[in-house]
Structures are given as structure tokens and as C-alpha cells.
Image (cartoon, rainbow, N blue to C red; front, side, top):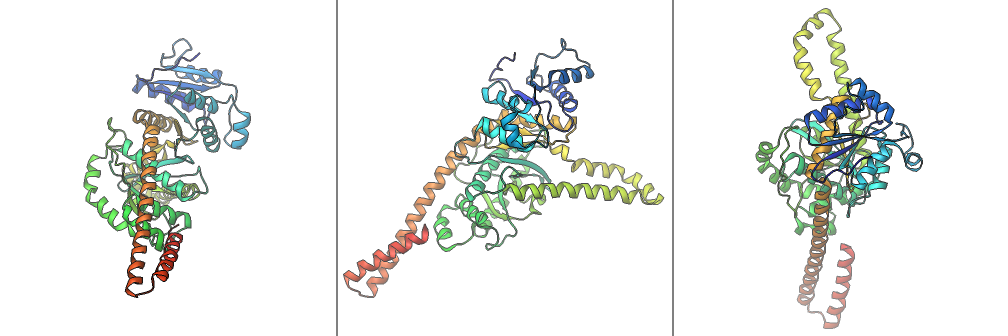
Length: 451
């Protein structure tokens, strides 16, 4: 029986059966994590016999298990290729489901799983529900860049997204980066096929207008009435602002394992939206947060992973082609090792499912011990930063501000148009009855154009 952990202590539920390797990776990673963080509790959820076998291989018997390592026995396992609907309906005693249930009931602070991504998202959304103001949760992942790393979302949870979904993703990503990377005003970019105002789908263009409203509210009316793309109109000013504080951002951004304990103040009035960004900007570090729908994001992620494998394999092949190349390769080995380490996906393991009423971390299915350990560390960090609560607060504030700004700016635009029509009619010396009729028509047309 697992006792409820004190709220002052971090407790993480681990899906011990998930991923390509199951307990053979999860159990050693858990033991290594506890050796470094004695103040946390880990719960291994899964087949009890399989978990105990792996503990024995690690030199621990059932009686010598640390007090802060618990086992929660389950009878089912969700396979990697299993349809999410079937897993949700038929696998209620699976290691993944029970791990998420522990978060729901408050026994655990977070869940980490390397299992079926679709099933994890479906079960987490069904059990935990989304935060108020969030329509859909999103998967966010940190990708390496020339300037540190870039957080990208969504990476596959939502194939089709509305403009409102993309706006919510931007808010959630901004909150996450502010908390975990100590960047007070993270730069937010909207992924598009180009930076020009005319490019992109209708959802992307509308999302740009919503995001632009958080940068310069007074421009909302003109953006909505004349179709000007916020992706281009606000990018210049926002980029200038971002550049002016760029040195501060670089100076305060910690290393990947040195996160601050105090979350910097979050600007509740604006997002640091810099406009449209393209695919190569992800790796340039142009933005701290890149927002896209799940279809585009997942394609970008998988393409990037494939390209890294291609380059590393090609380099290895070329250095093995001739005796001279092998000789030169001996001197290049240290540099090649550093390059491989820098772009190793395992170093960036741990994708967050943002927008849920709880912390859920998705590990790569093929993660090794070190990679899964990193995913656990991501969960610990997000629990300590209380990410779900921060997102809840900021979404409520920014949606409220956005609604008020849109209402104010639209009203102002209507008043300006009516005033202009009054002056025009008076200068033409029309009759009072004609003036009244024309003003009424002008008001209707203006409201119609801004709706």
C-alpha cells in the first residue's frame, strides 16, 4: 500500500513497463536518480515480478529497497503500437494508466512514461483533464540551437489546430520557458512557410493577429479590419525589443542542469511575440518558443532526427573509407565525440504534456538509462516550478486582457469611422435626414467589417 506523500516532498510515478526496454532502463534510472536526489520519492508502476527481478540485478533485494522507492503492482501493459482508444477503454490496470491515476489522486506529483505517445496523451487528457482556458494539451520539446536550445510545441498531440489553440500554445510555452530557463520575456515565434504577411494558412494568419494583440493592443483594430498580417506588422518592433534585451537573456540563461529556484516575474500584459519564423530559425535560436500545429511540429521533429542520423552516419562512413581517412579520424575523434554528444537526442529527452491539470512527461521510447534519468529530472523541475498552476494563472490573465483589448480597440475603430463619416457629411452640406440615414448605414458597414 502506498501512503500519500507530503505536499512538501516531490513524488514521481514512473511507468516501469513503457518504452522499448521497460524495467531494464526505468529501474536503474530510478536508482541513479535517488542517489542524486535523496529528498524525492519514486514509485515504480508495473509488473511487480519484473521490477523486483531488475532490482535484484542492481544488487537490491525486496527487503533492501530504499524507503523512498515504492512499487505499485499492475496487471496490464500498453504495447507501443496499441491504438489509443483501445488502451483507454480496455487497459485500466496498465502501468501507464495507474501512474497517471496516482497523479490524479494526489499520491504522485508527476508521471513519467516512455510508452505509447498516443495512449499517454489520450489517458492523461481523460484522467487529468485540461486546465481552465485550455482547449487542447500540447507536447513541447527542447531542440538544440546555435544559441542554447529552442522549445517547440505542438509536436504531435493535435494534427489540426485553430488560431485560438496556437495562441494558447504560445502562452503555455512562454510560461514554461520563463520558469525553467529563467528568461523573463522569452521570444515567441509562429512557425510559417515564410515571413511575408501573405503566406501561411488562415489559422496561422489569425493566430498571428491574436499574438500581435498581446504586443501592441492599439493595432488590433487595423489588423482585423484591413487584413494586415500581425506576423509582419509587429515583427519589427518586437524583434527590436527582443534584441535590446538579448544580452540580458544570454546572461541570465542557466545551463541545462542549473535551473534557478526562483521563477522570474512574468509579464502578465504582453507576450514577446516576434512574428513569423521559418524552419531554420528553430536551430538558429531566433526564438525561445516556436509555436505550430502538431502535424507540422512532428514532421519537423522527425525530419531533424533523421537528418542528424544521416550526417553522423555519413561522417563515420567517410572516415572509414580509406586508410588515410582512418588515420586522420584518430585525431578528429575528440571533436566528433563532442559533436555527437551535443546533438544526441538523449541529452534533450523529456517532452512535457502542457495544458493538463498535472505534470506528465513523455520519454523517448528508445531511451537508455541516462536519457530516462533526464526525463525524470525534467519532471522534478516542473513539479518544483509548479508549471500547471503558472499556466493556469497566465492563461486566465492573458485571455481576459486579450478579450478586453479586442473589445476596446474594435469600439475605438467604430467610433473613429463614424466620426470621419460625420465630418464628410457635414462638409457636403447634406440634409439632416440624409445625414442620419448615411450615418446609420456607415455604422452598420463598419461593424460588419470588424466582426
